[in-house]
Image (cartoon, rainbow, N blue to C red; front, side, top):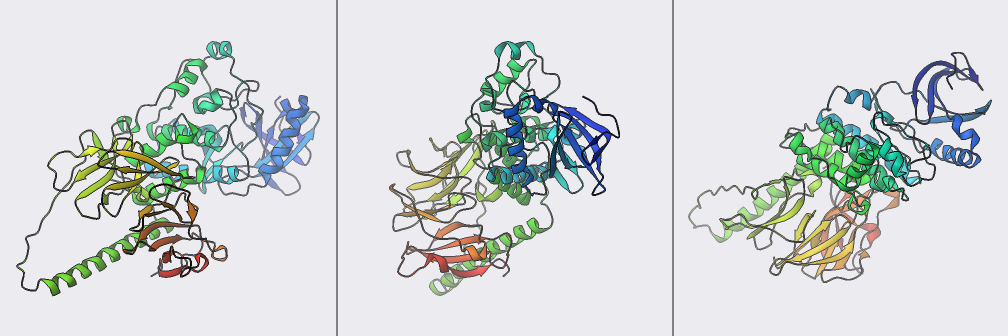
Amino acid sequence: MALAPGTRLGPYETLSLLGVGGMGEVYRARDTRLKRTVAIKILSQLSSDPAHKQRFEREARAISSLNHPNICTLHDIGHQDGIDYLVMECVEGETLAKRLEKGPLPVDQILKVGAQIADALDKAHRSGIVHRDVKPNNIVLTPAGAKLLDFGLAKPTPALVDLATMTATKVETPVTERGTVVGTFQYMSPEQVEGRELDGRSDIFSLGAVLYEMVTGQRAFEGKSRLSVASAILEKEPAPITTLKPLAPAALDHTIRTCLAKDPNDRWQTARDLSHELKWTSEAGSQAGVPAVSGRNSRIMRERIAWTAAAVLLSALAALSIAFHLKKDAPSAANVRAMIPPPADNQFAAFANNRFLPALSPDGRQLVVPVMDTQGKLALWLRGLNDLGQGRILPGTDQGAFPFWSPDSRSIGFFTPGKLQRIDIQGDLVQVLADVTGMPRGGTWGSSGIILYTPGTSSELYQIPASGGTPSKVTERIASLKELSHRWPTFLPDGRHFLFFVTDEEQPDVQGIYAGSLDPSSYCPQTHEVVANSMG
């Protein structure tokens, strides 16, 4: 039902029609009390369904509490003359759908917009709200950043898809229709297509489909009918990004592919993990030409590079000192330079957030590094430094990342989505040690037979026997300092003391390298000792 300009809905006066969608019409309007421009969405179909109206009002109250710069603010709800309506922030900008009509976006903009929308989803998911309709039409690009619209309002109970309806209906315009499955078909998760219960990981799949389209200019899942689109979502993998856009960063390809995993357990488990991954890729840049962003992210990257350089310099000075005292009269050795190429049909992934970094064995003879094949699949590759051959892909290490060695150089610890595992390289025996909750942040294997690790982006350090057992927490974040996480642990030679990194996004002076111990008699988790903070 179209409203004429000047129609009053409570204190709001309509000015012009902005658009029409599956949930109703959207109008530019004027708040006569506060003298501001707002957007009003008409939801007249709810008025005939008391159950949906009650659900709508309850969820609207929850959504109105979502205060986030990348979420369109809900100001008010109302009812007049049989019409239910929403009063929202009037977002000035271009929808992502409109922008995509011009073709793919630059990689730096994709990473920025993707991280902002993932942040918005994380905020909602932590408040118990699932969007269920993440698509380019619901993302607006503004000078201040991306805004996610229609948050959580299309949430009636999903019904199973009617096969006849899906077969008969061509996919011409992606709209959300009441009475079938909630969402837009091209961006639905497999569980949405099947009408199963949803959680935040469904939104992550949908955002992955949006990111895919932003990179390639093509939809991840296409078809001539709803049935063919649904079949593609359930059974087919989209073409690897790197085959369509060879200059796209391999790390971004892997990030999006993880979003689009058919099984929710194989995706990023939280939108926060996805946001961190996109931000780290943006910070790190790549061989594919992604520029490092400026501002705070570039400062953090410079600090990390500085600390890494300092650690390398100290190690080098120590080695030179030892060499000077032990081999004063030794003849100078020739310089040795070598290059290790990746195995055939594989490439080294961009070193975003350390997950793809190589790990040198303690005896200095072997190297393990995640590699990515032409289909975007990760695995661990083992290569002896003196080998003339190609090395070998370690079986059972699919999607392996963050590798670290045992002290005897015979085993490797690594992470896969949702798991901490180890592999004994002599017999290729793989053992699952523990579950992890999100994107891990490093592990270390001590001489005492203990593995120390960070199971997620917002976590403390945990320990577990290298032979398997029950994990236990080692450190506690100090609430008064608002520490975000304890990560990148490294055991010292005694196998009891360790170094780790504390992140704090609000207080850079707290962020830095700290020391701890597994011995409770000499170490209190509440008072871990700072070694050096990120401010130098």
